[in-house]
Amino acid sequence: MKPLKLLIPLILFTQLLTAQKTAINEYTAVDKKVLELADSSAKTTTGIANYIVSNFTSNTDRVRAIFIWTATNIQYDLDNMYAIDFYETTEDKVNRTLTTHKGICENYAAVFNEICLKAGIKSFVVDGYTRQNSNLPHAWCAALIDTAWFMFDPTWGSGYIENKTFHKKIDNNYFKVNPLVFIKTHMPFDYLWQFSQYPITN
Image (cartoon, rainbow, N blue to C red; front, side):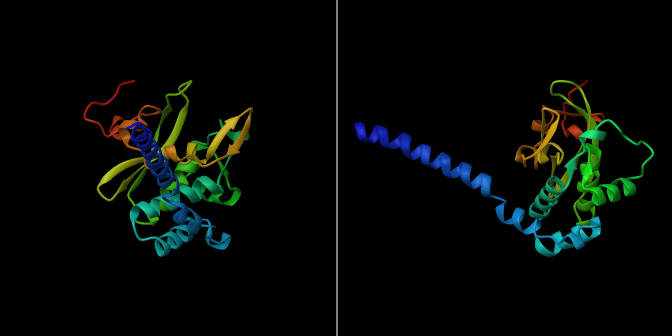
């Protein structure tokens, strides 16, 4: 009886490790493939979208590829994190980001959104503020994957700031998040983007 009691927790622990490993590696092939995109094809969102559409069939894989490409290829611009140009067009914002490979949240969101739209995925940039530490202005995206809306933050998903230095590290906690979970850290200005029958007020 005692060996059986020891065996059951061991089996459960092994299953847990296997489940975690599967979740971590779920998009390994997609991530690897999209990062093979040649620089010559990555100068425009049209070139990036064409590559993604040609190489991935499901909307989930396509939006994953867009998330990883954006989060990997844009470096957070600490020097200009508060320098927002309210008169810059979306087209100029995207083109500048693709040229410099630098940007802040609005640039990450604009690039992610533009590639989604050109890849046939319904997407919108969402403006709001963060609910962690202090209420700072922020931008992220909402995208329709098949029949459900999910939230994406390619900025927070690209890395983190520590000691006034940006550290590149993909964080999957900000990829394809249920809106009801996302609201814990991201508050949109427009309650519509909460996707809730009972919106949380300011």
